[in-house]
Length: 278
Image (cartoon, rainbow, N blue to C red):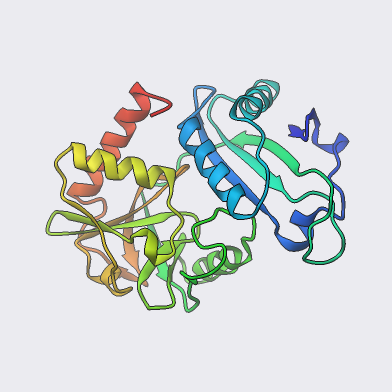
């Protein structure tokens, strides 16, 4: 496996990130994951814009889009990958043993691996821990993923494939690596930015596709238990695309996938087929 680290593309075992890297020591960093179709990273422009937004939130500097795209293409070629998960990570670089950042340049990593299709449906569980919609990193895609690791382990312990968080107001927020959509009588609803969720690239594309396809759609605050009462629901993410939710906390939803989920799943696949940078 070949990886790109701060300008050097080499075998994984030949590369080094400092043990004093601020990303390792404090979680000081941001990242993006992109789905690669036929050797081409999907929605590059949107993902780069979000990476830039996240980096601004942590006062990190991001290389240019052209520089990162060159690195990404080099990694994909070197590993012979056509269908892949591509990850771009930027950290605060080498720093003192504390929260304060040092003077070293940022560490930039680009890596990719083969990707497999998700199953068409999954079960989810709600977790007893809340996302802080007023936190300093709300809406920023940071590498501080310990909460997600714990929540996903909780989901696995309960026989589910994904975990769903409330926010501090008890509203539906997001899953560990996915946005959540619910449908009631044909109307699609998803939590708004104010709920504290990370605004996914796939989420934004699905909102646009729903509007174009005449599906009524609302970004609206929802109580957590709305997930149990939905006619149908699905998760969206870069690698999941659109994945129907079959059951919530062990209770089956009426349809999985339902009519709205199926329409948007098909619309998203059609989008990928016609435009790799929408």
